[in-house]
Structure formats: C-alpha cells, structure tokens
Image (tube, helix red, strand yellow):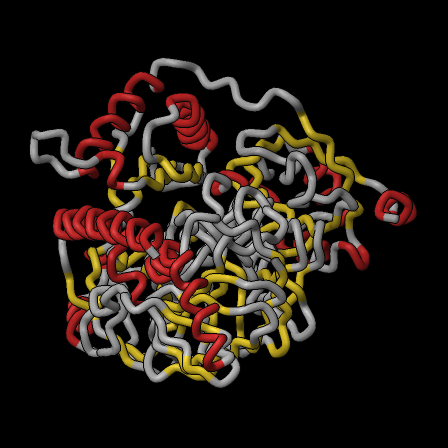
Length: 336
Length: 235
C-alpha cells in the first residue's frame, strides 16, 4: 500500500516504539513522544504495538491513499477530513483508495498520531523505523511529494466496516466509514495544562540551594520556544546548586531533568542522548511523559514531587490497563 | 575499592555507580559490569549504557513486577544487579582485544586549536603532536552523539580547558581535547573542545554491519599523517 504526501504539515515524522539496545554506542531511543497514543492508534488498526506510524506536530499533513485502508487517529484532538467527511479520532476508520486525508490544527495539545493498518514500512535502522532528527538516524521528516509504503495489513480486521462502506456507497458515494465504537480518550489525553507533572527527585536535587528547591516545586516553568523532540528548555526561576558539582558523563533518559550552568532546567525528551554530564535534579515519571509530550512551546507546566514507589505502582497499573484495552480492541476488530 | 551504589534514574532505569571521576580503574569496573549484564540477558532490560564510572540499566518494570512478596520492580532488579556486580568484582576485566589504528592529520585547517593547546601546555606544537599521538588510549564510553568516543589516556600535560566559545559546527572526524578528555567527533556537531587534528576514518555509519568503529573498552592508537595522505584516504 502506498501513501503520497501532498503537504507535509509542520513537522511530521515516522515513529515507532524506539531504537533500544544501542546506548553503548551512543544511540538514543527516539520513538514517539506520546508513546501511549501511538500504541493505542496501532491497536485500533490491528497493528503490533511496535509498528511505525506518523507523529504529527501542531499542524497536520495532507495525504493521499492509493489503496483501501484502515486508519486511526489518537493523541491531541486534530481537525481531520477524508475528502468532505469529518474523521473522528480514537476509533478505526475505513477509507477508500484514492481518498485524501487532510489533517489540520489541534484544539489542545501538540502531537497527534496516525496509525495505518500494517504499519509504515521504511528502512529499519538499528532495529527501528523512528526518525531521530537530533542524531540523524532513520527517515527524514515528511516532505511534499514523498511516498510512504506500508506493510500488508492484517486480513481479519474491519470486515464489517468495509461491508458498510460498500452499502453506503450505493447511496452516498461515501469514501470513508468510522467504527461506531471508540476508546475513551480521557485517561490518555488531558487537555488541562495545569495538572502538575510528577517528578522523582534526582541524584543532585539535594544539592539545589533552598530557594531553588522550593522554586522547582512551587513555581511554574514555561516551555521555551526552542524546545524540540530532544528536550524542552524551561524558562522561569533560575535554579542554582549550593556549590558547583564536578560530574562525569553518565546515562540519562527521556524525562531526565538536567540543570545546565545557566540555571534554566532542560527536560530530556524522546531524542535524549544516551549520556549527559549536567546535574540531574529530577526525573518525570514514565506515566506522565505522554502528558509532557503534549505541552506546546509557551505553555506553563508545574512539577509535584512523588516517590519511586508511587511512580512504579502507577506504571504497573497503566500497563495492566493498556493490555486490557489492547485485548478489547482486538476482539472488537475481529467482530467488525 | 569504593562501595558500589545502585541508584534509580526514575522508574525505568537503575544506575550502578562505581565512582564519580574519570579513572581507568573505575571505567574498567563499569565496563566489566556492562559485559556481565550483557551476557546475563536479564528479562526486561531494554538497554545498557556504560559510562566513565557507571552503568545505566534501562528496564521495563513489568518484567520485574511483584512475584507475591509485594516488592516493587526497582527493589527486585536492584537486588539482582547487586549480586551480579559482586560476582564481577572478583573477575579481572580483559576488554576488547583488537587495537584500532587511527590516522590523524594534526594542525592547520584540521586542527585549528593546536597552537592554543601548545601555548597552554607551554610546549612546541611538534611536542604536542608527538605526545598526543604517542598516547595509549582506551575508549571509556560512547555518547553525546552516535559513535562519539571519549578516550582515556590523555597525557596530563595536554589537559586543556574547553573553549570559552563553543563552535556551532565541528567537522566530522575532528580529534579534540576538552579538559582531561580527548575524543573524536563522528559527525559534524556543535562542540566546545579544542580541535587538534582530524581523522579521515568514518567513526559511525548506521548502514554498516557494525555501525560504530569503536566499542567501549576498545584500545586505540593514533598516528600522525600528512594533509596529502588525509585527502587521499578521505577521497
């Protein structure tokens, strides 16, 4: 199956679950910023959770589908049309060959995800199809005129949608039909930017001076305009250590909050390098990273401190919830 | 030997820390632990990042979820890592066997900061080149960018503070000194280290069967080449 890129949107990249296993040669994970949204989109079209889809930033692309296909949109709520019909998010949508999908702006949030049945088939680099724009690995961002191929779609999903589309076409020449069921987006997309992000104190948090430690949790930080998939620069209170630390480079990850000498923290995001040498004042907990991925430059975020035990308990709960959803979706797709 | 600490880097990574400095012995212990971890192939380990004096273990907490004792994954994996590290401590570390020979064209357009390094060290440019090329280097770690190698073994006389104004673009292959460290830039990158020379070798190419020229622990020898040789090998 082929997809042609008519307009690329602001910053649209191919992303999957990431490029793990190569940190020892300096290769970071990359992958979707809101990894849960991409996973759910993949489930909704019958894909594996590791399939590649599109990460759409702030303004979406226009795409033409050369064959019949099943798609799903998740993440930030995005204006989406298939020719003249509105395309709803968080559910499978069958669209006919020759359809044009126009993705517009987002009411809230910064990143939407488009999964296509079968998953996008670009060259696999070190075990992943993710674009790592910072490291220059994987496919480049989408450009007008580019073509994307997909793997063969799973055959046993969405049969009822296609039948309905055939029946509708006899009457309305409809080129798309959306499933009547959907997954509840509420646990997976929170439009409220004032909900604080949970942070575990990092190794060097005790070295912050007293005022800085208070400021970290009591004041808001604006996401800087030069933030990207590698990291968010946070503007607000300047934080300082009681005395400078001499550190040697060591492992960092997505969600690590570093404090460079200037005093403005940086939160590392999906394209975090494998190692860093700045003081590590905190770590955003894994279950809050998808929410962090949805902040726009200029928006203000707050931190609240939590424990490692709380973070891991929440992580295990989230994974149980996601596997239940995956099973339910798989059953619905077989029935459809 | 200093006590080994196991610290959490958030809820999906644990760091085994042997120390806090750039030191060949600490690095050897970190790399030995990394090798032991790789061969142990523990469940749920997503990635292992060895560094100067530590190893970061990225993991999926689900693989270490409650086995009925109510303990959380970070405790269960932490305990497993502690045992593994205790066993490693008794084994001498051999490291990567093969020595990689790296040609370097020093000075001129390839090493614009060679004079500054010589001035700081209070020696002639020729002396800097012969001391730098004579070093017995070992790759302590790769990081910062894919394939960027941090080398241990820089002559202490050549330690040079980082540049006050980092460059926006450091050419691929640049051999540089930053404080007590020396390293080689795999791609064009921003950087604040002093550039003393450049190698025509390709340090990282994702399309090669082995993308990175070096692995952690690799022994590296440098030898000075002429600009004409650089151009011939780079062509």
